[in-house]
Amino acid sequence: MKKRRPPPWARQKTIGARELALQLLAAIESRNAYSDRLLESRLRDAALSPRDAALVTTLVQGTLRHRALLDHHLSAFLGPRWEGIPLWIRQALRIGALQILTLTRVPDSAAVDESVELAKKYGHPGTAGLVNAVLRRLAKGERAPLPDPATDPAAYLAVAHSHPRWLVDRWLTRYGFDETEQLLAAGNAEPRVSVRANAHRIAPAALADALRAEGASPEPAPNGGPVLLVAPGYVAARSPLFRDGLLSLQDEAEAAVAGLLGAMPGERALDLCAAPGGKASQIAEAVAPSGFVVAMERHGSRAKALRSNLVERLRLPRAWTVCGDGLAPPLRGRFARVLVDAPCSGLGVLRRRADARWRKEAGAIAQMAAIQGPLLESAAALVKAGGVMVYSVCSLEPEETDAIVEAFLSRHSEFMLDDARPFLPPPFRGDGPCFRALPHRHGTDGVFAARLTRR
Image (cartoon, rainbow, N blue to C red; front, side, top):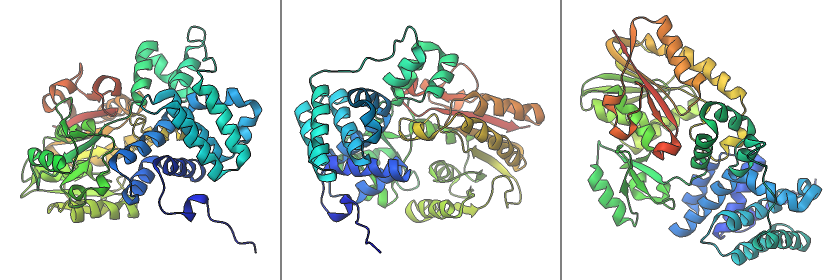
């Protein structure tokens, strides 16, 4: 049997930022790997400076975010040959095109030359020549014409802002052209890294000082949420502060959700769908020292990772993990505070999970909504009289947000919808009682949450 050759990236140890980005993009496309998880693990182990780590993140996530626009130009130049371009060379072309089209700090000549070198290493002289010829056309200013926004606005937005057509159609119907374009543009913005102090062990001001000592430049979150923003090159997994459990990665809007519970010291609390544990850790901090939170997760591997995060890394003494199905929780008694951070389509976090937009299909919204309603029903049975239940999703789609809450309230007169605004920082307070964070308005993930009280 012929011995299989290892892939090019397995035959060497030390590589540059662009080559690592190429390897990651090839793995994401060929193995259907998740970009955020793969980036975290490879950057944690790579011997790269913070500047080069930031470049890797920019190249990988940028190529995924702008893939439709990049492919629009590249396929126009290559014609039918584009479909037959090998995976590694296709990614080298995209990386080069991204730098020419969107990154002002990288000289065009460097973008071309580096991509040609990658094409030589991962292909052959012929493919290197092809990469050189195509990217030089882009560097000279040649562009394929975009669809006409006047005659086909959806096609224009889908290409110019690199989002799937079905999603653009949905948002155009709901938001109109101008706001849809703003929302799409926000989905392509590179987000700042957002961290939250482990209040059980360190004050936010002390964490900011510790981050500065590591060379980071923390800033307060723009909406007044309980997080700090640091530069995109910050790799938390390489930080002693993260490994020692003094901070967690958490978006500002996501961090605001747990505050809607209004959890108090001494209370019993439940996080029904807790992994990876960001919100559960906030609840544990709020009910300390005499209260507790039960953090439940359905899948065994994720429940194990949840325990490792809450108990071993963060060292939260009153966070107890349970492996169980939220539709049939293996729990007794009732809780004063229950969080249902339900699985969802994830269409509110496309800027952080750039590959997700190309994985999702329109049917995912209805599939998730079919789970969310029963989860809310299950959780309601565990809320004591006078207790509070918060339902949240990282989605803006009506089927997963208002429709779920309205259907639940129509069946449960013992629950009432509370006004979430008193529990939110002022910039997050909208026109209605529910919490809605919008990427193009708040600079955060897209998040919805409703606060429900049992009479």
